[in-house]
Image (cartoon, rainbow over all chains, first blue to last red; front, side, top):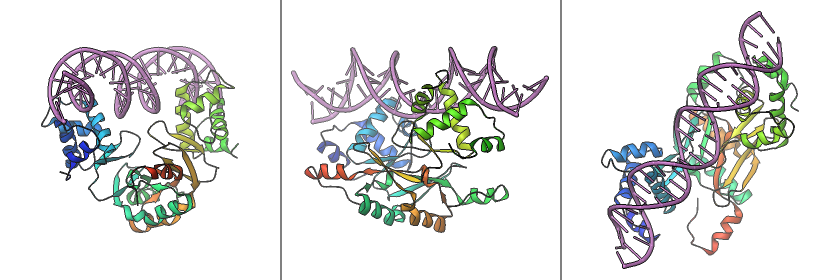
Length: 148
Length: 148
DNA sequence: GTATATGCAAAGGGTTTGCACGGTT
DNA sequence: AACCGTGCAAACCCTTTGCATATAC
């Protein structure tokens, strides 16, 4: 469990509730989870918890900096606990597989955005779309029209 | 209008219809548009066109490489015509403003992903989240806890 | 003429909201 | 005791789908 998770909530004027603890624990256990998946995980120990509570709780936890989310694919967002290593999601638009690479991979890019545009990137929120190695090779037999 | 737009459709086995032409024109006119916004634009000249046709048409146009979309914010995706300069969206998570920067800004980053992970990035599909200059400065008076 | 595209309406995910009740402070 | 948080159900937005009709080829 993240140290001081309860203090962080209290400091921002939020209360400590079983649901908030359960949701945070669930997010940590699943390393990536949609609200729905988090609900299922929470319900393994507390079947009464409601989906809308999960949504509201995730919002609160994000507010106080205990979790973040990223938009992978077109569907529901994925939540993480913040103490995990910062990472970027590479989403394959062909096979939908997701791989994680360390946030530092983007250090120079992020530095450039800051220097040239004053834009401070929230790198863990980013999902990069494209094609993974496997799909690139699989499509070699087909047409030959992908570069960059 | 994109040159050979009709040929590109035909080559992929699609038919040329007024709706497809209208949607493509609308996407070009609005430089960024959600399906809903595109519908409104199309309906300025053809009020009978239906939302589901816009969705289906955008999918076809994307298939043949005439448009792309990116996920800005949490809501509907934004579509572009492909002949515009490739660009990346910087989305401010505080004021929701979106700025575009040339795709080349990410050239090194994208090159690294290719070299290290074999991942071929679709850069125009990417949205980078963070805080814009204005919001960074506006929050200077508040707490001081953002870096990277 | 035949297969594809369209319009319409209904269904489907994912998310938010109003309200009364229950729990934390 | 006061207020915040929760469960429940309904509403909401965005998108997809089934089907009959219309249209491009």
